[in-house]
Length: 296
Image (cartoon, rainbow, N blue to C red; front, side):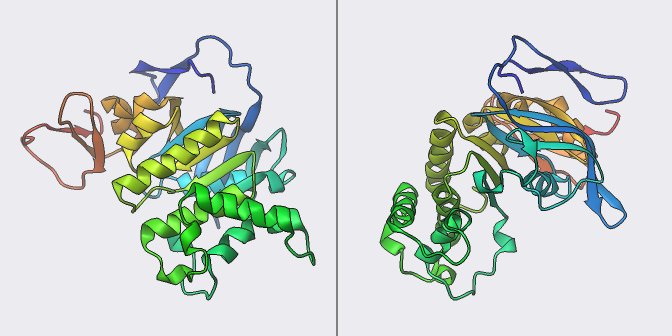
């Protein structure tokens, strides 16, 4: 994705948004998907996906529930095999460079009752590098300690993960990803369900990783966070609707195109926006709410 990529304000005849690209982005590609279709059983979750993510990008993947955001990350991580198309991760087929990729699932996918400590969880990020049958060495322990310090969880290293708050759990699993020292982070809702301070601190960590040349791809439902803290955005709903600068998450027509059906835009100051799936109908919008409907 070029740093100067932009979405045209005019929709194409098919209803998707066209892309206008400025100067070339000479950074190497961290992720490239070409005409990728993937799904579960006989149901396609994503169809004909084309996506380019350059090294050092901080990319937000946005879209409604069930849009295929998690499926996209799992496909990049090599956990799902695409039905068709080509997936290139760090220049090779998915999983060829698995040790250079850190995948963080949604919090709901984790067994929080498993009897393991914070330090043990973070050390799991080192296991692919340590190798089967080998014990962690001094370098591994230092990586774990540094990751815990980065997310401010070093004081709780011995605590059982089930005793942590939601925000603390997200910090621990981000620390696990950091301990792996990857070139590519694939993070599913890394800042969902945390307080504002924790969100800002975790985003500071992700921004620092991107500045160091690492690539960060994260799904999020927080559109304001996406607009303010990410560099780029990919809009997903069964396919790629558009991709471009993160500020485009405030584009009302693009949000309506991505969220489909009804989308509720809340505007407080003319620049901030929040999109919610709007399952109900209004004859007259109240206050600063604007409702967009299919075909409207």
